[in-house]
Image (cartoon, rainbow, N blue to C red):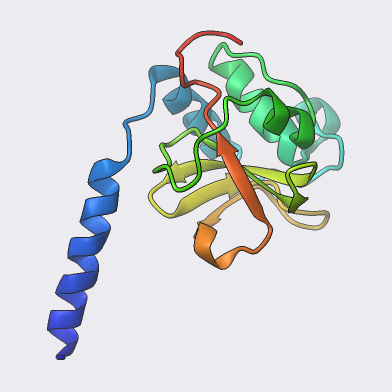
Length: 155
């Protein structure tokens, strides 16, 4: 198979997944816009934003959804528990929250899905809020996703 043929096949497959992904609600789009505006902010454990000098992972996602008018819990485990959870293998939409840990009962990290194959997160001490590639098939610690803006109303 030539490189061009292989490239065309990959792009065709990717287009099928992108077409299947639902469009974000207005609230989810606001949450992503807010999260993106925080790129470069330092990671601060327990941080909720400028007052603390930066964000931790769940502080970022909570602040993003607060900006969108939706209240979600403060810590990653509680955000995961609050849901609503997406069924396994559901296509992600911008604004979905992505959860990581050793099990669904031990969630230790959360990021916000920003675009096909991308997420925004505050990863760890010494880092900054950034946008990076995300592929759930390569992350053994990926536990699932929720869609806080799924119903378009405050929870």
